[in-house]
Structures are given as structure tokens and as C-alpha cells.
Image 1 (cartoon, rainbow, N blue to C red):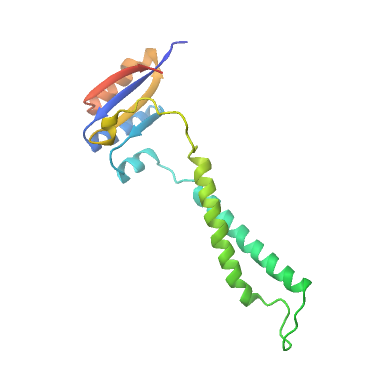
Image 2: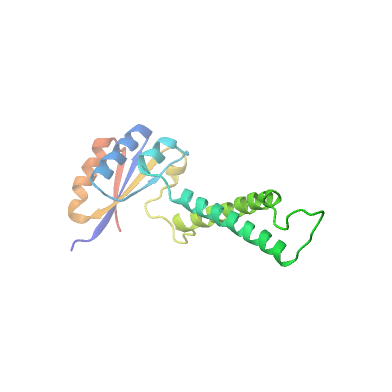
Length: 169
């Protein structure tokens, strides 16, 4: 088995980087991108499917509504307060508490799922990072076996990488 290397390509143009990302995804290769600006186009090129965070938020909201109604109706049935012949467990006033707990549980589950799915916190520095990737250039790091490095290096060069460096992984 050959050793792995990391190819670090520096791009000055966002469109060329997006083109290279498409080629790497077609080759089913894992990569890492560094960008000096937040770019919607790069995000759409990298993440072609939607995040699972929305499902965690939905489950958190449903759990919050169910918890609120169980809590309020259970409390009303346990400690009765008959006021003017009104029903002991009335749904209409409990909808406000249901909405509040839905928002609370959905927010907490959104934050927790975001932390979980983004693998935060990361305590080790990212390999291949250059300080110029935060100022004026885009960076693309591809990890591949030594025998495939030449093919991916030519792919980066053809896509428009200004500079390509090879590092041991």
C-alpha cells in the first residue's frame, strides 16, 4: 500500500475552484476547501444534498409540543381548579405553552445537531492551510495515494490552480 499525500492547490478565481470541485466529486474524492469569503456558490458545489439538521429541529419541535401538552394537562388533572364550570383541561390556553416549548426544544435540538454533525470542536489544526487562503486566494486540499497524485495534480492544474504543493499526509 502506498503512502498518502496531500495536494494543496491555490486558486485566485472562484469559478475555477467550483469547476475543480465538480471534477473531484465526479472522481468521488474527498477534499477540503478554504475560502477568504463566505460563498454560496462553493457551498452549493460541495453540499449537493440538504442537511439533516432540519429533521432534528422537526423532531425537537414535535417533542416540545407533546411535552407541553402532557405537562399542562397532567398538572391540571392532578390539581383540579374548578372555576365557574369551565373544563379542567382546556386545550386553548395550553397552546401558548405548547408553542413556547416547541420553539425551545427545536432551538436546543438545532444547536445540538449542528454541533454533532459538524464534528465540533476540532482541536487539531487543519493540514494544508495557508494564511493567504484567508486573505485573497481559495485553497483546495486533496488527500490521495502516492500513485494517484500525478492524476489529481494534473486535474488541479487543468482547473486553473496557480500553485500546487505536495505534502506528506
